[in-house]
Image 1: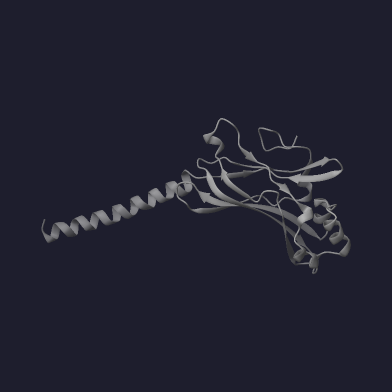
Image 2: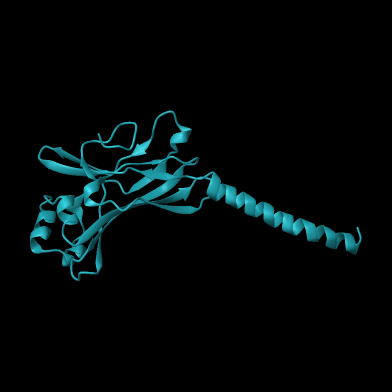
Length: 196
């Protein structure tokens, strides 16, 4: 192979290799990927004079998600100043899930239903809240509705972060911004994301 043939080979093989790699990366990250779908509502359940709040989600994508972390972020506008948003992170009964299986890979519909633990809100958030609300949190008698009615506006956003089983890429999935009207009394349907 002479010098001219080497340059011609390089001229064609390098761009073809780069384009092939880009196409493979795009397929792995945008075509065959995990995808989280969240419930439209938050479930409110009264049991033994205690109120529980749950949300539900499923991995409806084509791959499993590993080492997932869940975060529930409540944003309230107007607690101190009318235009400012304050953030309260709400604890969950299970904020780490080792594997979120794809429902497409299983006969059984796999959905996660974490519970919001309002009585465990970190005291660092108390600086935004009145003493009466603080006491209700410490007594574990606060409701999500009470918290969401505190300011001029409020929204609860849920995040699921985990690693794609094939690419190893860390991905974050975000729910819609749940409003007060999205809290529905009742349990989630066993095979879906709806509150019955």
